[in-house]
Length: 316
Image 1 (spheres, rainbow, N blue to C red):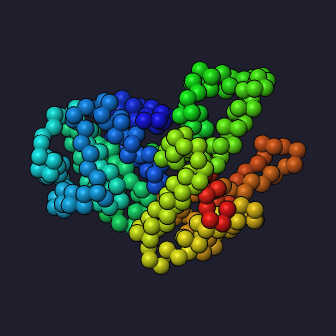
Image 2: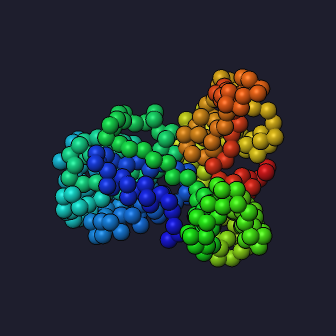
Image 3: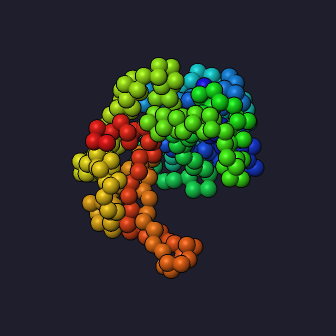
């Protein structure tokens, strides 16, 4: 497995004093399942339980009746065919967007406290219309984004010591050796084209074939479009897909106005789904005072969360 900084987030959650359930959100193929699975096997061993509602839709019956902790625990042990020790078990609910009742029941499970719980899902942030009640105070939310440049370089084989040294030089404005500088510029250009989707990075490192990389990227883009079709309200699907297609061209255009519904609805959906990130326009009150800058929330542009997917977009 390639190193992900998110492992530290999971470790901190496990050691936290107030132990709540953890919800991990993120775009399609960003690596949620892989890093959670690695964490579970490392810290819980055979007491790590994974239930995927997309691969195994029959598992939804666990939450088909009463949502109290005893009933759900009994259903889980019946479904898995085994029991688990208290305070030593992690139950991982994957693809929770397929079973919104999990988000409601997690309050009772976390309050019960006999097991640890992690939820993960693609587009789970846009499922608010289908969740009857949220577990406020019992659910901790984290977003997993694509691999950053540091993680990309570690996957290349660069040592953490060298990365830390380069950071120190940057912060102290100390020149970097010319050969290392040229290598880093080349790697950064590659990162901008490849992006940080783990499966795409693996393809690039294994083949160095940009055609294969683009095929993998466009496969992910197709899956993202399928998610819009599957999870968005029917009347919003067309405008959301048009908003996705417009992102590359819009980067060279003026900011959009958030207050207009035909911008607000699709772009809010893309933001909630972690597919794109809005960036507000900045206004400077006083020309001679750079600290007087403040965001104009009603004016914004959208950026793909992954530069590689932006480069691979058909109209990019």
